[in-house]
Length: 301
Image (tube, rainbow, N blue to C red):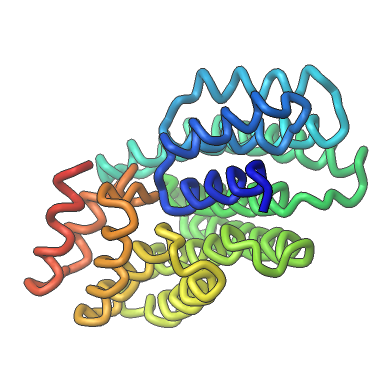
């Protein structure tokens, strides 16, 4: 194995175990070694975004778009969409933390932003035809999934509006699943697309009354287990598997994935810990056996 190949493997291992600072450093080194490689620039930007370093990531993405260089341009479009999606996600988390619905006037603005993001992606698809980059479709799926969640968190008016929002959200969830399938058609072992399908069903479950969540939660669990069968060290899936098992009140089973996640990354930098970790973990009914494992993770956020 060449030195560069080892460095690439190391960079992705850092990324998938949530050691984003190390991933930033390693992808940066790869871009220095090959300044023409758009892949390394893209993943460098992705690692920066995982640590909320938006300005640095935006500079890299802007350079990729300005270069107008085939695959580099596509990576730039994905990166730009990811930045917009994460900014929208942060906006949603403000409402969740405050336990307030999204006002209808704000919902209108958010719908416009989603429309603009999707138009940019669809235009790229129209120009390029089939794109053989799994993360292109993976990111599109995440955008659609977030859009569905935002619709469901919105303030509602008459019952007819309520029903139309639920139908629109279900349609968006279905479209997101299609995008993840597109990614897996390119690479059947592409772990983020498998994991994100689990998150899709998890998010869907949380919109339902508590007594109607079990089917979607169990579906999510299957995807997390499948992603771990492809990469046993994927911290996101380990941690989220633990969260799902707690939701299902399978506390004893939840200890193993939590312990393994913490052994790989003491900070357990996952989606929930980065954003709503404390709130979610306080509300899912963790029992006394699991609390000692989770408590050190939470205190390190």
